[in-house]
Length: 247
Image (cartoon, rainbow, N blue to C red):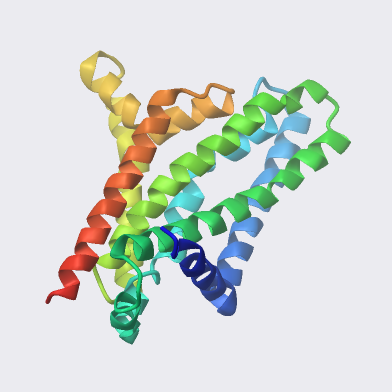
């Protein structure tokens, strides 16, 4: 893993060397900023038990569907299209180091975008009439939730990028897989409100997990689920890269 820092700098540099990285960041901040303004306006007119940050965290699925495919589609697909993947693989680095660094770079960018939303807490602290709505425990747990779920979705995007040379195709595959893992699983879980199947799909539902995180409940089971899921996705991606080398 000694080459990961160097590869990570390369990936982060690639994001900020192109317009695409700035466009994705601006899209995320614009959408989340508009949603935050709407939430604050709604809560100021209609008091409820919900807090502004809990509602913000409930929107985790939108960056997952749009931002994650955008920041992962080029990771391996563009390398293959440009022919630079062969040069990279002949360097003194392992296949896993390459895949891990690309995943880690995307996670770092994703975390940076969410970190900027920390300004919402400053705004709420300055203008909120109810300081109790700024309980730091649920807020920190909410950020843990969006990061843990996000890094898993990013691992899916990295896998999709390894399956094709076309960035658009990689983005569409990533979007489809993330759609299935989030919205479809949530919809299916609502069809089985009780019983074993209901419990199974509730356990898999990121919406259920995010609801727990945003209430300050950090359960070990979802953490293990998403971290092990990411490890599996990165393992499969590494194998795909290795197999392509020998074609």
